[in-house]
Image (cartoon, rainbow, N blue to C red; front, side, top):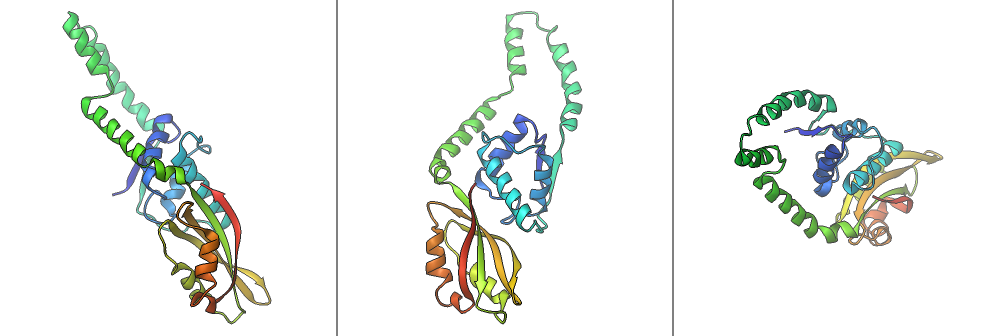
Length: 234
């Protein structure tokens, strides 16, 4: 089922998107896709740092677009603008006008307050559960994430670059997520692999990843060197 977002340039829309991205790196799936591009384009400006998860995601998609673009298809996303919200407003206004004249005594006044209140008991309970979930995930949020761009160079122009990339992506560990990649010319017919990755800072050391996994057997059969090109907190 496609994800749906309403009025992303309003405080309520950004808050819902921020809650949605609390446990997700991308809008749908496990890699950047056209769904991310659709939501990114719907935001008129870069989100405030008040919305921590939206700001992290926005900066990451920005970095991908500048480096190599986004080609994943995604699962589909639906974005509704403020116009759809405005259209709904008139239908609720008459109800308010009818309720106020109908209040003949103190008991009815109390009912009006309940009717106009935005939070029901179920909504209060849901808000408390969300707050507890955010508090429980506090340590994970404090650890932070980073977006890293690596340059991976082969031994020579005869190195199989597909196998080189497979060797890189075969490195798996908790807190590591490989992202988009592309081949870039170095010279004399040699190309290098540029690849993005997202890491949880407390779980993954980039230096150890390179020295203990990418520059040792069997990966070093294809990899001659590996350099950090960009390292950004997200």
